[in-house]
Image 1: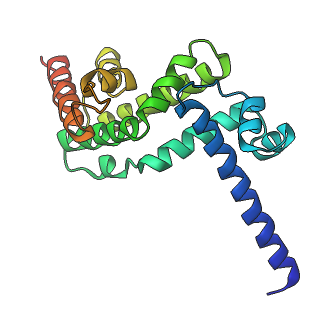
Image 2: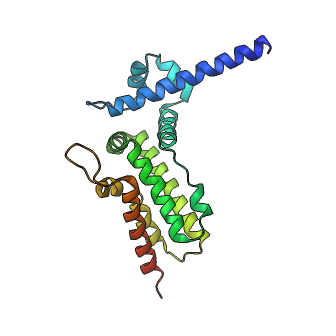
Image 3: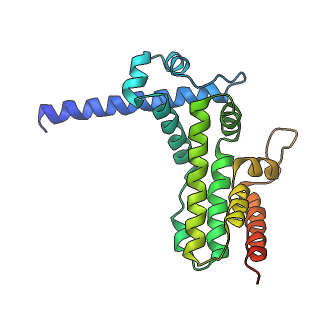
Length: 204
């Protein structure tokens, strides 16, 4: 291996370590007993790096938030390929519901706080709306794959069923803070409700 390639590998590893450290700090600000809003200054301080390092790594606050959402999705094992390989619509919807319920369950407190803060933080609110729109696109694509004649209202209703707020309400809360329903159990409820809505919407 040439010295140049070795140095490049070291720089890349250091950059990845810095990126992970910053994202862990951002998540930590939200997960703590007194959650702090995700600002560049707060994250830089928590990660023990300079403000400029955060900008050099993510480009902007929006880039930082995008990286945080991607990291949370990766942590949950989010994947939707099975939904598009499913043999029928009920199976496809079950895969979609399971994927999103696992995601919401994976870091429930952090995701709840992010969505709450989005009402007051314009950048965060926009990012959340964009992510929600991506979820709607996934659902619309799955329905189109199976030639489901669902109108926009039905798609919107199913979309709401797969959102965090619905998951949070259906999963419930035990006295010890744990969910009353697991992600798998919650996904079953979501899938059944989604199929009922689509059946009603497509009746002649």
